[in-house]
Image 1 (tube, rainbow, N blue to C red):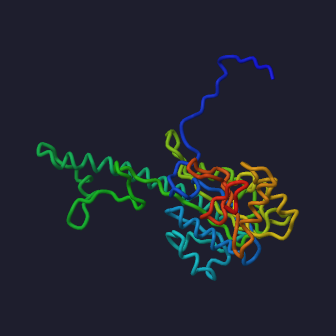
Image 2: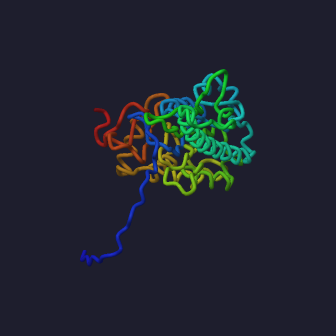
Image 3: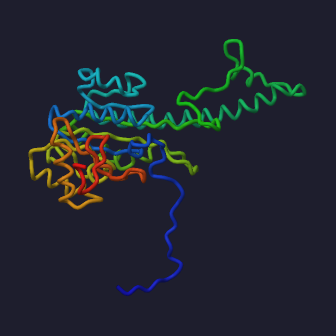
Length: 306
């Protein structure tokens, strides 16, 4: 094809990263928007909870009516307190509460940074015999007989800066509920990476990874809606006897391989009980493939059984 190049229309890419958090080498990038699909008893909750645990999230919110009955598994999640668990999947106001909590984490982080700056000034004044320490400053840092610096509950990096906590939301057993059909959920999915933003600053938003567990890949009655499937960064696919649905999954998720190779990988990964195909649509450069049998076996197109 003939090309005529011009000047002055180059695209400038802003600094930043859509996946700003560092995760363990063999884990996917974060933030994640993941759908896990499988029939009842397929082991959706077990696989997803284990992935969240491996990823190293600092705080997890849960929307599930079966949290209590699955407590033996759910206790693996980094849940800070009982108020981070929501049992009514038809009460979409819980999404506002979660967003408010993410924003509060951001506000607390900014307050810690401000207090730490004041504390450093306080130490300079305290060690300068020619200056008087203001009473308000003394009272701010005096605790249990000594002067203590501010504390950030999520830790600091090597340079002493506050680490932004990596947060996630798990939605389980919500098929057919308002959580899965509400426009509020759709808006949250579309903006999940931008929650907890820092206006006027170049640093990335805190964001919120989201994990949805569904029995069907697509459904007209509250399964996994198009707006969620279209924005996935990863999927967990268990065995499915509906050939049309499997074909549909392949047509939407076969990114780096053609549809036939994807189906071969799917059949190979799900041939054993509780086996699943993990599809990473934004794999790390160090990963040899975006397809895996479970989490620990990369599948190279055309060479699965090797």
